[in-house]
Length: 317
Image (cartoon, rainbow, N blue to C red):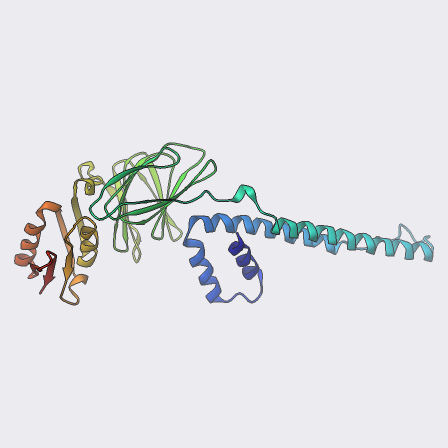
């Protein structure tokens, strides 16, 4: 709230620079609570602006031209006194609004959920929803009687959200916001791309002033450069298949493929040839077929592999 109030002061000043505006946008997007706090601070700011107009109350004027000079002077001084007192009371009330703690706006305490490399685990959230996190994944939630917010910091997640029509569940993944009332959906992150797939119910995906609605058996990609892609049919046999260590990559950079796989592998795959990671591949396989896949890369893409003395996999050309 202190940061939000400071941003209100900065944004309403006449000296707010473009750089400060960019900083504000980044701050606003970095955490769902920042948006809530800023809305509350902005509301109080507007109340303060409204109170400020009370100081502009004109002095009381004589009722008619028959008022004596003494009476006019008396009314004029009385009006100025009332205006000044009214202004001071109004400003004092506004400052109290800005300075007093706002109990109802205090966010819920964040709760962190994490998995280690190779670990897939179920977690029950504060509202009874259940999340399955993929390997080496991290989720933070803010859940209480007034809000249901979460952020998938890294990795994959299968969300089974308890239906509460009066209180949507809001999930942030990279720069995308996902809103649901109650549904089952899957999130997979591949580099700067996020895939959203829905098994049951409906979700709304928002990204940079654009949005798309998904229903059961649909999926879409949100790309940092391309934005929200079109909704496509989802084969339910492939829904959240990372739970069985099965992976499907469509035109994905090798470095992003390895980032995903290495969260599930105790012996990671590394690149030793510069520039190789930017090449794009389409692959579908189970994790236990890794060496077969590497053999196919060697024959079909001239990408070789070997095991290092420490047991890691190394790709080179």
